[in-house]
Image (cartoon, rainbow, N blue to C red; front, side, top):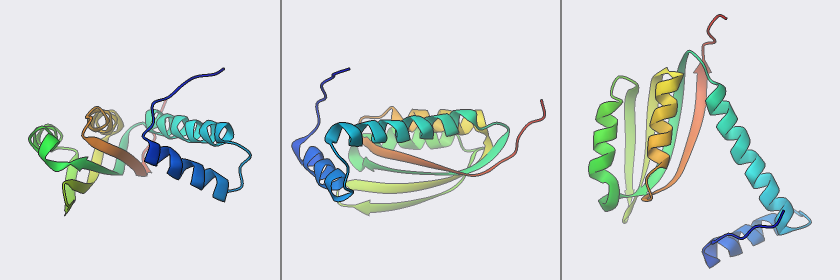
Length: 133
């Protein structure tokens, strides 16, 4: 299936350098692998059950989101243990350390991903307690 994408030129150039450095055959193959990794990451998050401990790391444009981000962090204060925040010019990097029900952690992740001002969101599940079936 063919599709078209709008990707900033500098991002595409970096993507091309990356897949070529890895020795892949084509941009199409590299895109398929990237999509597969994205899908697998989503499934890991969706399959988590019970109580989980996690880190959520994301970057964002400070001025565009800071008030909304504070509101979200207050909504999830029961799940957020602590945060670490650094400024890099107009961009910020934040690490959120969480512990709580998997469905609440998922909701927090999806809420963060919903902002245009957030560049990337990465989740690492550190511990997951499986519920008995």
